[in-house]
Image 1 (spheres, rainbow, N blue to C red):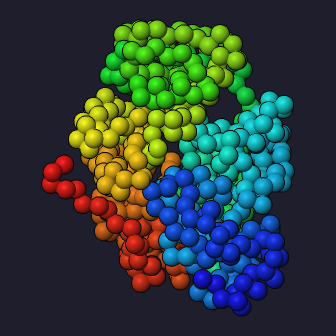
Image 2: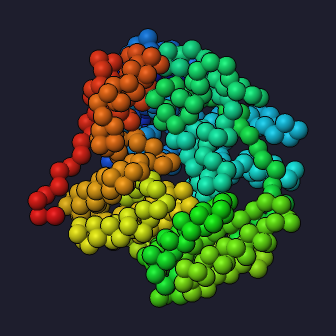
Image 3: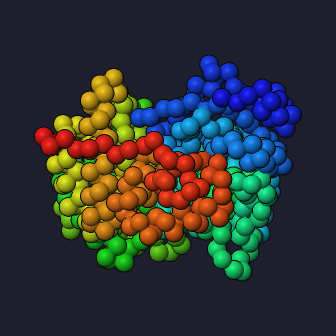
Length: 480
């Protein structure tokens, strides 16, 4: 816990009203969207300017106090939760748009600005912001930068790193630096590319310059219902093979459809289908109808039961809300769930979904699948009851085996949720010791004292500057 001197120093920087250290009030910060583990910070501080962030970090650096940045707390891998009573630097009060340049397609925002609010703010000018995580109505762009978040439309438009051109960042020493260029590529090493996706371990981003895009002339959204999940999976690869790059291609399996159709966003999916594909194509008015017709042709060739075009904006909106609210809808059928985030080659979809079904049977836990099928970014939702410790352990072990399966078929342990603490030991499954040592040395250059979000991403100790993590991978009982 912080001593009196540190509390007074922090209050001098941000004011008494921007510091929480009462145990009852900081308990709400003991986890982010990854709720399987919890640990309380020593304090939560709410800076309102870059200069305040810099002064805070300088103080922490000088006094050896560990800290971590946090946005809306929607991260799903534990990247924004403390592990050793770190001070949380919450950026939710840095939530302004600083400028919008429609002529040059740029916007500058603070890290606490909510993702969806940017599109809403610029929509009347015919613009939008492309990265759209399912949590975009509450997650912040600063958090998206930390996790290099994706979203439904990243298949065609790319993830966060493809839309961030420059940042202002407070390094773990307190120094303020600007990385990237508003226009053109930065000369020299791509340090912006290093920081985006570093999960708040290399510094605290306080300003972000992003690309904003003109809305496409035409958008067509199709909903395809399949009797067999294998046919839906094969359709995804077939679409790409036919040269079609959808703006989005999302899949939901039977258990997900059951949960979401009982929610407020009721579509009316038939009870006996096994999978749905939500496919969107966009572009120039002249060509989109032809592409949509080709999508229907490919679906038909793979035994689709029905495939329909959204009749109007209201129907399209309902279909998308059904997909985007799938995660919270699982809460209607399970007390708790773990959201996994693995990536596989598209061609392995059918095989991997079959293996996940086998693992579900093996561990005796239901798994709902809702994911970005077009780019092979899986999101198995493992249902469990946290009141039963043994069930929680089985859920974690099931998640571990799914991640290893993703790596075994040529994929990755994360696509957009980051490593955090959830997957930290799986870094050693994906990388050898030399790869991990190289990443640890890079981190040491930014953070020689190991104070900035310690115990995340890299299994430690990798070097003398790292703090050991308490997170361990559970062993699989021989009976499973």
